[in-house]
Length: 241
Image (tube, rainbow, N blue to C red; front, side):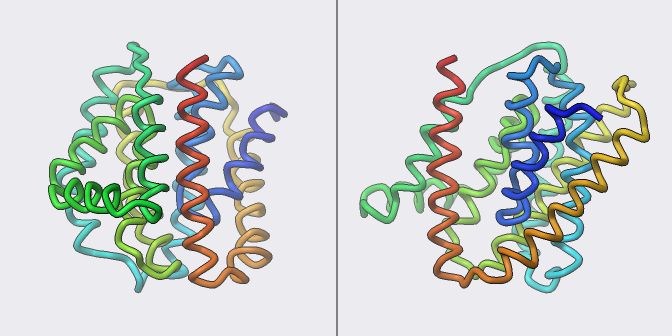
């Protein structure tokens, strides 16, 4: 079992267990920095991300924002598949733009002008979702835009996480299907993939009971804001390398 991939999964699974995203958002750039190709990183991370998200959905499915999820299916998911198909062999780096946007979102509570700007942007939800699909298909970073959108809705922690989880699982399912259609296969053995999956599930269960269950809604919103700001800073730093 590759130790570098295992270490990456420890960190990113804890993050995804709390916020619904993380394995793809942070795991992809980490594996790229470690020398793995984009398609290989996807083939390893996607099944694990889907599994963690499904566990979150099963537990709190009654809190899903169905209106938003339907729009994700209509306006976002098709563009994920299309642009992943187009750029499978063409690397594009827009981390700087997304990183600055996340920092902008995280600062909204400190500035009425920022808050009003975000509200105006999200009013055009269909356009925002199409942009999110394009970004995720190209870079695997659409989860950051998803968290920004749902964070703006100020929902309780269970609503926030499960809605992100089902949307993120859908992102990953469309990506996995696209890789299957284009015939991509990684050279990682099936047994290794299953061991990584089982390991991540254990990490999720420990985080769920030991940390997530103890966080109230107010603390969760504060953590979520910190998560957005940290994500933005890391993406900006990555884009400068």
